[in-house]
Image (cartoon, rainbow, N blue to C red; front, side, top):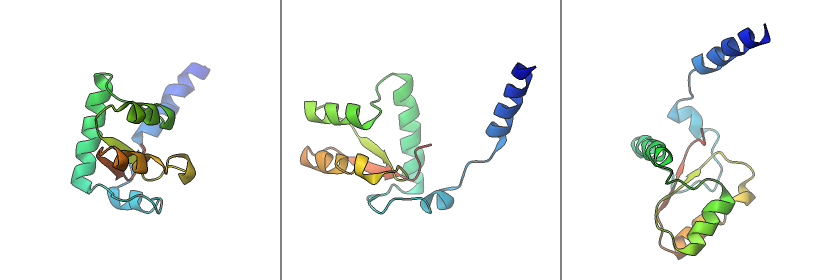
Length: 109
């Protein structure tokens, strides 16, 4: 009986609409600059999905920091609503030192 309730709860969670781009901007951190435009955000999300499919994505601060230090090339996409800020505020500086492009998107979801 418990198994029957779980799919219903999952269906309800999937049925909730995602927040719009404007609504996501309300939850941004003050350091989230340069923020990707709405069009660029869609393209970055699409690129992230494609990279994840081909297992060419680095997730998490430690892993990203390690590969930036190694000199791996690519684009760094940072979520603008991540808390606490202190955890990842050094990543943009590392990217600028190594001439890597980076951008903030409004939401980590």
